[in-house]
Length: 402
Image (cartoon, rainbow, N blue to C red; front, top):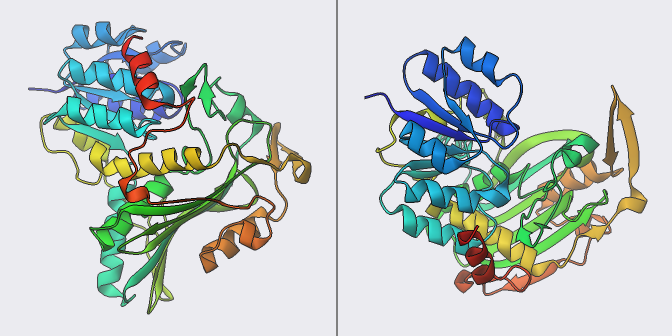
């Protein structure tokens, strides 16, 4: 029987999912039964017609699931809406593919895990399975020795319209609901998740014990556009992450895996890289969305389960709990323009990012005026209950009644 799919969110990254789903619909692999979107784009009917699809388009997820009898609900809506939408889909008995970042609060994730039970429930960290496979293969072929540090990093330029595209963009909260947007937790979320997954692949007992966090903002936003984290564990490698969306020079999202006898640098986009000075050719990422929607009752990818996303969500929560607000760096930035786009950049930040990656240091240790770092210890027993205004019980109750 052909699986039926409901897509929630057909704009932004959801448009990529829509293109894939329509391609598989046209091939007869799935039926795209419904699309949920608050502001459906004018071109949707033409896209549907080209794929011989006729999904119901609605603003109501309940109506969409009931109309389509959806086997899988793919959720690509704004992050702060994920918890309530995933809860509704799982309560209806549908499998769920939830785009990254999953939910802001650990308590929300734990509730969804309990609700899902044996139902297939995956989080869309699409690149992580390919990254872990590439690192495993590289370690087998190149003697890196014991792994001591895993670093996720990158430096990109996001135009002003990236932060003006939606009311939640660049915000920690919106109308009292946590959003937790930020450089490492949204545009670079896949890098952080991959670094955590590699650390756990290297040492299955890896768990977050201590955290040092630095957040800064060149733009006038609530969230950060410059960030660095250093995470310790009682077992396994140090995990660091450093990134910016205010780069003065672009460095593609990547991973550095450092061993005692050599290192591996891997670009996430195509899994190309260098292991102990040996070039690694590009590898193709598996289509995790395709597997999820074609086999809604099958087992979830172990690297993409909601439980596998918990270290990432706990790290986000611990960072927000540790850092009251990003350090304001606007006076050090400059405005650039090209081809009709405007963006803010911080001179020298990309050099500082690369130096921090090479040495395992934070940005403040590279003379970026973003510190001192906020520190938290004893996090391996941390239950994820944040101080007000992000108290988990209040937020979860608020969303249940939405």
